[in-house]
Every structure is written in structure tokens, then in C-alpha cells.
Length: 38
Image (tube, rainbow, N blue to C red):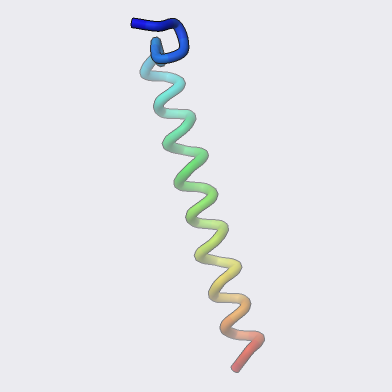
């Protein structure tokens, strides 16, 4: 396995958390945008 792909479980958890938080933020900002539009 190349070093770049040797991702530990902790790093996977951090990445998953980051993705979830980004998606959550996008969802919230989209809802705020819709509220402002209507």
C-alpha cells in the first residue's frame, strides 16, 4: 500500500465528520436561502 492510501480509522472518521458537517452546512444555508426568497 502506498503511504498516501494508508489511512487510519481515525482519519476516516475525521474525514467523514468533515463531509457530514459540510453537507449539513450546505443544507442549512440552502434552507435560509429559501426562507429569504419566499
